[in-house]
Structures are given as C-alpha cells and as structure tokens.
Length: 516
Image (cartoon, rainbow, N blue to C red; front, side, top):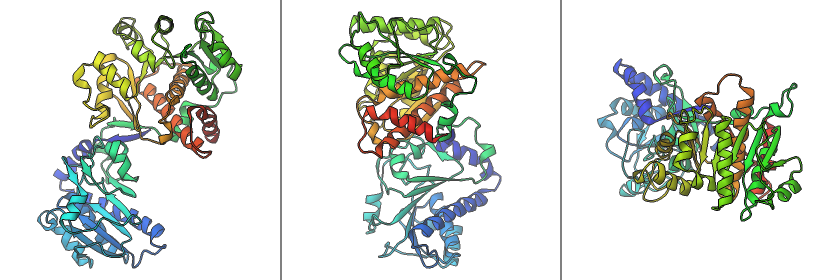
C-alpha cells in the first residue's frame, strides 16, 4: 500500500530541517524534481524538443512561487525559454533569491501567456493555503487568459486552491496534466476535487522520510495488494482451506442481489459459495442462483465451514429479512467470523447488534464487522449511532469524508467503507484508507452487491491463510485490496462498452488472471 499524508504532516516534518538551516536545500531539491518532470513532459509534448520550448510559470508570493522560479532557472540551463507571470502578490518580497536566480538564468517576467506555450506551471498557492480561491478571477483581474486546452499544465506541489488534507476546493483552479508534489503524496491530491484536478501525481523525495511518521495519515491500495490479498490456490489447498463465504442476500421483492453477490464471490476462486436461503421463506432464490451458478451450495443455515459472511444485499424490510439477518449475525458472533453488512442490512442492524459485533464488545469479539454504506446510508447510520451533528446539511457536500467515516467507525467499533466516487475506509482505532475513483461505471445499481462479496472473499482469505490473529492493519489492507479489485474490474469491463453490475464478475476473473 502507498502512504499518504496530510499537508500539515508534511510541513511538520519539514520544520526541524528548516530550523537547522536546510530551507534552501529543500527548495533546490523540490525545484530540481519539478524541473525534471517538466523536462519529461516537454519531451513528450513539444515534439520531443526541449531546446527552444517555452515554459511559463504562474507565480504566487509564497514558497510555491519560489520553487517554481528555481525550477524555471534550471530549465533555462537546458535551453528552455522561460517566463514568469506574477499573478498573486510580489514574489520579490518573499523570494528574492529565487527571483535573482531566475533573472540570472535569462528568465523574464511577462504579463501574458503568449501565443505558444508548451507548459504552464501552476505555482500560485501551496499546501498551506486555505479558504476560497478562484484562479479564473485571479487571472481575469490581471487580464491573463487561461491556458489553452491543449497546453500541458503542471502543478507545483498541489493545484492552487486545493485543500491538501481533504481535497476540497472552494472556487476554481486549473486542471493539471500532472502534479509534482514534494516530500510525500498529499491526501488531498487523491480525494474529492483534488483528484479531479491533480492529473498524474509524481512524488519527489526531498529528504523528509526520517521525519515523517511511519504511520501515514491514510493508506492507499495499489495493484500489488490485489495479488497479495487474492492469491492463487496453493498446491496443498482443498475446498475448505480456500475459504467459504456465506451469503444472506436477496428477497422475494429483490432477488437479483443474491445472484450478483454469489457471482462476485465465485469469480475470485473461493472454495465454496454458500447461499443461505430457506426455500420455505424465500423460494425464488434457490432456482435463480443454482440456474446461474450450479456449484453454489444453498442451505437454510450456514454450513459449518463458513469463514466469512456477507449480509444485506437485496433484503427488504419484512419479518423474514429481519429473521435472516438476526440468524446470520448470531452465527457470526457465536463463531467469531468476519461479517460484511451492506444495503438493507445497514438499516436493519440496531444498537444491540452493534454492541455484540463491535471489537471487544459484549461478545468479546475479535473478528471484524465491515459496514459498507453509500452516502445516503451513511447519513442514516450517522444519525442513529453518532448524532445529528455528524451529518452534513448536503450529503457529500463539503464534508470531510475521512472524518465522517472515522466518526462512525469509532462510534460503532466497526470498519466503515464509505462508498462514493472516492471510497474511504476507517477502522475502529482511527486508521484510514482511501481508494480514488477508478471508474464512473460503478455508479449503477448492483455494483455495491458485488463489492460486498469481494470484501467477504478477501476477509475469508485472510482468516484461512493466517495462523496468527489478523491485525486491524491487515483487515484494512484486505478491504482496500477488494475495493481496488472492484474498480479495476470496472475499468477492464469498460473495454467492451458500457458497464452494468452483471459485467463485473467476469471482469474480476480477467483482472485476477492478468495478475498471474
């Protein structure tokens, strides 16, 4: 997993180095990293020609402006024509050394972008900025046109106006082709508006590693995590050693989710899919699922070998669904099994159940309970278990998703997967994960049923393959890997056209096959 840090954490790591007199060294390292990546993009976009290409920096009055001026000076040494536009304040007041170096290198300050600009560097605001900001207004006040759509824009450390912690933007900014960030990857670059405007993120090591916490603000999954958490079978494996996922999903009103969830679980190569559905109370589910997946074992109660449970997709608000949920949760508590609660299951679970399900609760439980709400379900859960003050006036709105999920995780003692364009995960002790949006195709009915099944598979694998107790961090790792697999499957399925939830299970198999 990749480590992400709040901007405040990176500035804290810089503080002892700056106090020791290393400020200039840090700035030169950052500037060289920025210049290096600009050169790479020039090689790709300026017809492969670095010499004679034109780069313009938009300069603010702070450190980002100084970093940009130093980078422009270094680019000039490679034959790049460099210019700068002071768009916010006077850089000479706080960055005299950088301004002098820029002039010595042959750079000049101008008041317009000009007809031909190969790269624009956004060096207006950095990670310490806060409050409203409109790049359009700032440029318009100075009679400066926005860069043309075909122009490569590279943000210095962070796109101006983006909150480095939350990714929120109060106003507008330039959408970057790439962002070159310094010291560590900022959380805000992969979250909310920050993810939409940052482009490809490059992180430059400027020597902060020993000063950064070994525990990052947020963990972010990568493709390798899928390989680790969804491994191929071992030569010595047998049916039960590969894990058994029990599924309590579907109802007479909504039978489809039982099939979507079963398909997702089976697509991962789990040892057994156990659909728990009494034919006397939900008669339609057995023929539906067996007609599509005849290897599914359909029983009225969980088979003894169940390793994890997913409960909730497609349940309705009837006494039958409530009884199925109660029986499933009772089995999870009695046998200390991981359980994923999704969809209607989130509305049916009550405080009494959470007291039994939470880590170290009334049942001395050690296995995790994972809640997987979308924004509407998250609002209802927060009202019930955290308090109305935790619910934003507008769902999604300007609410810090990480803080919102963390509050619910700590209140319930459960892991929380808050599903939106960007998906965030919070653990009961406050560890957090983030999965940036991979595909808008997941914004369709039934994809959450698939994700719930993938998380249950990942946890079943962890429980069958780990001899020692599974740690909270390992659970976070497996949950994030499942989320990444879900997104990668949507991207894979997209190659054949528009994606629906039914397309995801075959795509999951394709993604896992590509991982070897």
